Image (cartoon, one colour):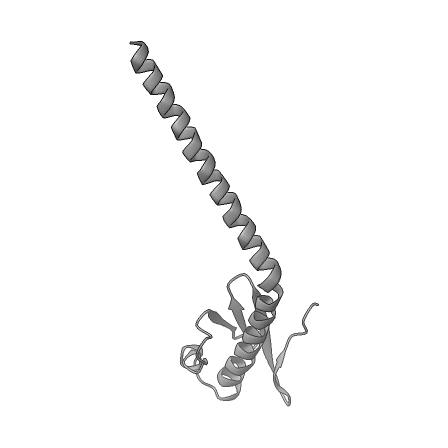
Amino acid sequence: MATGKARKGARTRAGKGAHTSNRLLWIAAVAVAMLAWAAFGSAARGYAHAGTAYGARVACSCRYVAGRSLEDCAKDKLGGMELVTLSDNDAAKSVTARMLILASDTATYRKGYGCVLEPWDD
């Protein structure tokens, strides 16, 4: 019986060691992700804003100047803009483009001016 208890304790210690190494690996992965976000996060947000601003402006013009449906306008998105989603508001004559949680921009049709982007809050 003493042998069975010793084996059981050995398994428990080995399990804790594996758990500790998994925890350290997880902490290291989170640290690397945080460093990558700090290094590239502002650039990613900048590209996201540029992409959503472009998408909103072009889709608004397509929708309210050319008179096409939003689904038809979505076909005109450039390569690399697959993550940009479009939604329109017929009452306001505006189109909003969103890219995940990174950026969102709205362009509104104004008679005599065409589609104009809403000001950015920097």
